[in-house]
Amino acid sequence: MSDKPKWWPDNPYPKSVFPMERDMYSEIVPNEKTRTALSGMLGREFWDIASETIWDAVEVEIEQLQAENEHLCESVKAMDVLTEQIVELQESLDESIKFQTHYAELLNMYDGGKRIIFKNSEQWIKRLQALKGGE
Image 1 (spheres, rainbow, N blue to C red):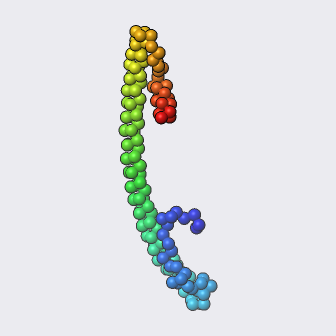
Image 2: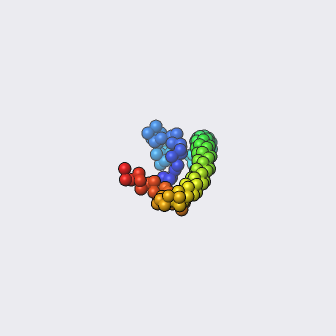
Image 3: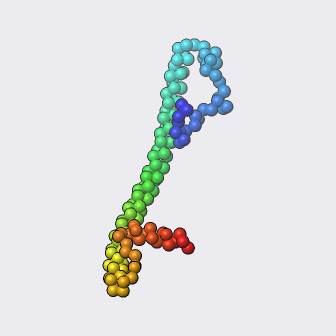
């Protein structure tokens, strides 16, 4: 299986430690009935070992994913708070621009000035960015 996840456990019976090849098995255990019985018994043992090893690895991965999920949930909560703050700041800026526009209109009427009248906060931000760009 080449598409194993990164957490998949290594084979606990590496060829470097257990070098016997499959074709040698019938030479070592020539009796077919004994070989079948031995294969079944070893298969059960190895299945249990493999199952426990894989399950242990799965449990560790689940714990890590749960920890990551908790971290992501905290990040989402923090983003929600920041989003609410941004909305509140935008509303405050919008109200401030309304007042600024009102006073600019009044002063322009009073003294005939040509103060900039902003239609909305986006226009005000663009003007601010233009001023900063000119520094």
